[in-house]
Image 1 (cartoon, rainbow over the protein chains, first blue to last red):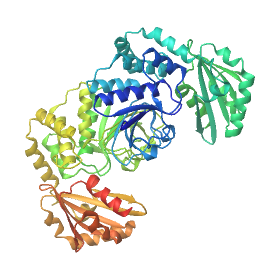
Image 2: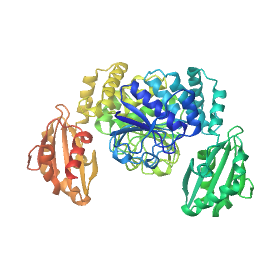
Image 3: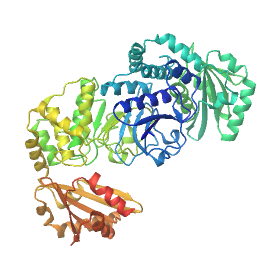
Image 4: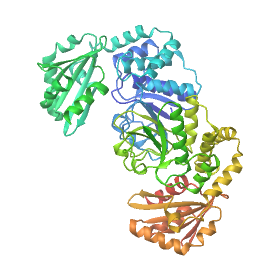
Length: 308
Length: 308
């Protein structure tokens, strides 16, 4: 039984799973009895990375306090994104690259947040600062996390530090970064085993702007039309979500990971703001979003401003 | 006119002033147009350090937004301890060694908090990480901050990292750390130009525990009795503070920086908890606190638990 859990956020993405494994490894090298856990099911992209680099999936844990007193958070800091019983354990460290909110401690702790594209980019610095060698499989997971968060360096969230880190990690693993990255993104964009309910909920986040509430779901795809051909069924599900959650707007963005564009279905009373906000015509509840791939940087701020 | 202000907390101590100067220097070396400012009057200890190493006192600034859009916080993160118009500027970085509370941003930022005894200990790491040389005067200020926060390495808040950092900084400055440190602490403990009102307010913090509110003021002294000989006058002032602020308890601790003990005046309806909490007799509103020097680690948690 380990003493400290290292965990990423709920609805885990590749960065959350891989950074938990990576940081638990570093902490063990430094003498801490740390174990990576996960708060939900991994996606296909993450499974591809783990299989490629032959690393086991961390186990799912619902309540941390049953087993440990202390946890380390990676890739998140907001309480509502963390393990359900976060208030019953002590957070001793946070490594993150998001905004800081809904976070408070009674004691000083190690809190390292940096405005880079991926948690793994910060973790590589920590290996260097502690002069710990990065094993090839761990380097592969860090590389996967950076490729995932940056959509192979195409996302506007990607920084020079992320690109440099990926270059160094690619050299350690020996893989061709472009080739491996494309294969990993394609694996993640394989939607064949997903239900329509999965598509609009697996990677979906709710936001507030003024008195309005809106939700943005996003899926990566190789063939965008394959998803959007089922628009009629998707609209029924989305309208159900809008009604049950009392939303003013729901945006379901399908992102073409090969060409770095998105196309979205927009539903809700305030879908009228979409045309002017994105300067693109809405026809039959559908809108083209050329060059838009980042919910965080390119979709949410634009809607927030239009609604405020 | 600079673009970014670097600032420590209100009622600035030596760490807040020296770390602001230090980090502004590092950021300028890295190409940012940064200026250290202060939020209040420096104490005698800080003035001694600045004079010794021939560094100018940063200017006092009441409103940041009149001059800059962005600030960097050192040695604090809680909004109520920061500049009054903190909500009107963007916090782009935080370097701190306290608990995290009342802090929230809309965007990712560089946030570096570590559980060490002094902000300057973290700053020395940052110089190394950026491979920037530490000039002798800046090294002297960092050394002063560490000596101040750790009471020459005697406080329980002091970590091995602080001691190691002080050793390295001592080597850069060329001063005898023990000798300089003692002289600096003595300068800070010179209370001759302080009014009694100053003594109970300059380094005083309010806390909550359950439904109770208490305040702990602390002064460093070479001759504790010199301060406590004026107990009758001090009690009048303290009772006034208790009444006007609706406090349940006021602790005024006078810390002997040479022998690492404290003696306190305790006033208020809940001063009954002091005897059992500290296992020391209260006679005539006075209590001896052997070995106690740290408000953060040795006084506040004990009172908090006793009142809760």
